[in-house]
Length: 97
Image 1 (tube, one colour):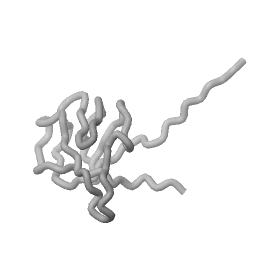
Image 2: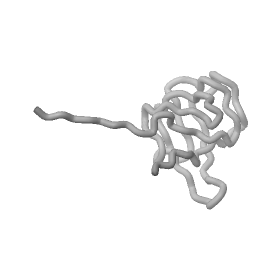
Image 3: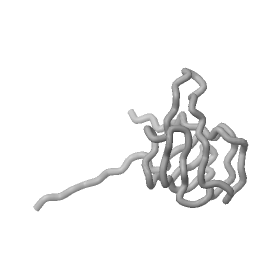
Image 4: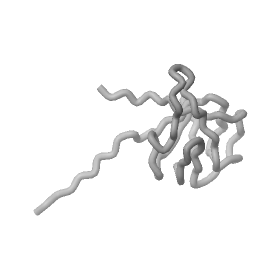
């Protein structure tokens, strides 16, 4: 079965809606000491939400320890909020005649 839980967390003091386009991500998942890289979990165009369903926005780019949104975050975000892609699976179909 698929497991869509997220281990990507925000590593900043909480911030209110509409204030940031660049968000620092926690580089350690806390449990195993594994270094987290958002580029391994998110792709440009992903719509990101926090664990409490607060909307961050659409991903413009990702770096080793940060993500950049196309516009400022939609909702307020707290430190250690886990971030999810709300559409984690895309099906691209091609048909031949």
